Image 1 (cartoon, rainbow, N blue to C red):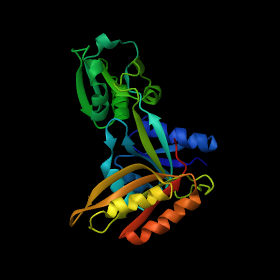
Image 2 (image 1 turned 60 degrees about the vertical axis):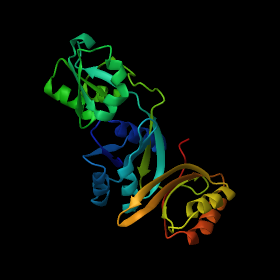
Image 3 (image 1 turned 90 degrees about the vertical axis):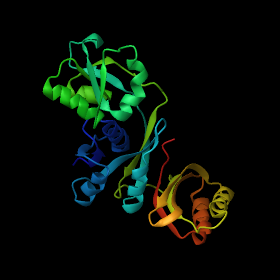
Image 4 (image 1 turned 60 degrees about the horizontal axis):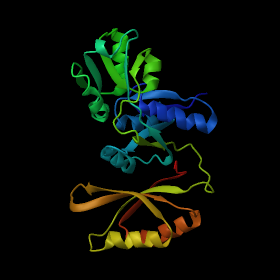
Length: 277
């Protein structure tokens, strides 16, 4: 029986690429993809039994963090059980039998357009139009038989919707990666392999409270790979801190948690997992 994995967006998206890559490497099986219109919908799909797990983007090396998704991690108690970094290669595609000179309009998500805008400066006749999703732009062209219209999307989208790639890899920055989190309570991760954790905590509104925590984590050999703060609604100038830590010793990690917990007002462990890099 295929694992059902929820993604935000449409089939052929980078979310689907990430889901396929992670779970195929895990057990050799390509999962069934459950499309969700929003990131909140990932959790609805899991809680409603429609999906077994979900893959959710959390940050990109070019555009930064997806801040609303940090809040979703805190509010929903599904544990992070893995991560995958996917290189984002943007491709210009259209119905077969055309070339770039035939294209007058290109559709895609605003982020994909922003990542490829310099490429289109050499084609001033092409109008760039923002859409809700990269893969849906490709699907709309295929389903509508739209000639003269292109899409910026993944190679998987071109394959799934029968489009021809007119120009591969048109993104400006080639070192463009998105980090996706694996949300899967049923997935068991061996303690012997765990080397990364995601935490969320709040601190007393006193001078040096965050510096004190970071000093303790450093003492225990914890490598801080990300820290993100978001306001606490109703508590002016106070924040939730979202932190990712890498470590070599699970024992030292648990000791560090024991040491910092009394200094915090709240501490949620969002997931312990194997780092992708």
